Image (cartoon, rainbow, N blue to C red; front, side, top):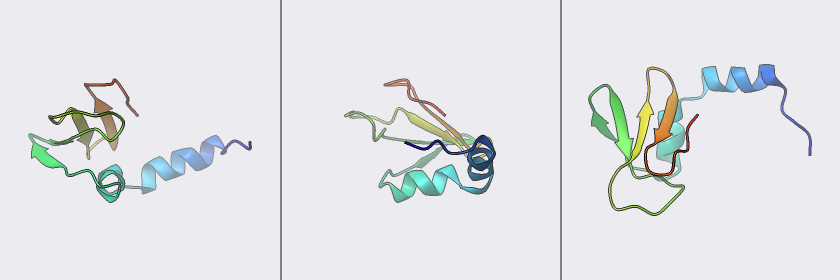
Length: 68
């Protein structure tokens, strides 16, 4: 399988809103201070453990440890 060039990945990280991408995947995000929180789509859970930082365009799940 072909790899995506590093420059293209960096461009996508700059130009694509992670908040909009997560919401488009069906995750409801709610304001939690300066960040947004929701239920992680990568595992089953009853409470929100996914935190999205719009300022940094990064996410982290405190339940399963997935992050970018």
